[in-house]
Image (cartoon, rainbow, N blue to C red; front, side):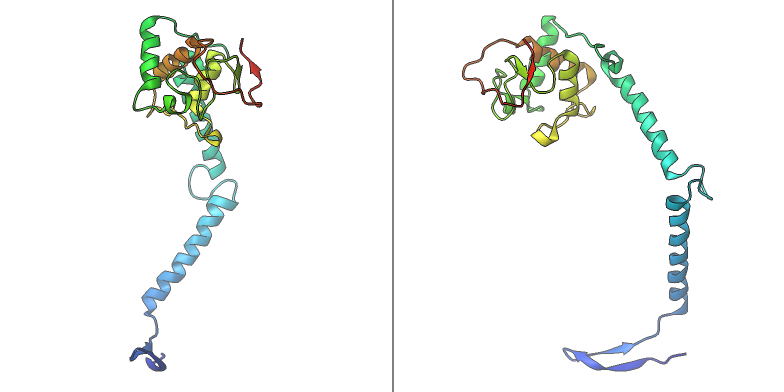
Amino acid sequence: MKRDELLDHEADGIREFDNALPRWWLYGFYVTIVLAVVYMFNYHVLATPLVGKRGMIAEYTADVEAARRTGAARTPGGGGAGGLVALTDPANLEAGKKIFEGPDNVCYSCHRPDLGGMIGPDLTDGKWLHGCGIDAVVKSVRTGYPVKGMMPFGTGKMLTDQQLLQVASYVLSKHDSHPPNPKPIEPDRDIDCK
């Protein structure tokens, strides 16, 4: 067994002992290394783990399928193409306007209260970027476009499915409203919505 040894260097008058580590600490360290290797092989290398019911790939696939099922169930109209119908009654359009202009949602800060566009595009003209049907507008509001600066509002924490439909219906109701000084049409907006 190695004895403690006083080393010859010092820092600010403090000298250091070269102490041997306690054996219990060393054994604990070695056991940790072995467990890490076993864990890595069990969950990252082997297709079917030795311990546990499913491997990570099977868990991931099951989670993706579960998210698809619950996502389709939460989507108004079942989420199918053409499954949504725009709301046209005044109460829902007024609710959509309140959501659009409300303090909790910042739609108006990029698209202006009259939907003429500032940072975001003009939502009243006939050229759109991501589609102009109710399904496309609901999807745009739900998922957002973070690359372009629009955050997703359909996470369940921001807007419910009914609120998404109300705000999308309000946006569509303002088509061809011709606000004063609208933002010019960008060249990448190539979907004709007239």
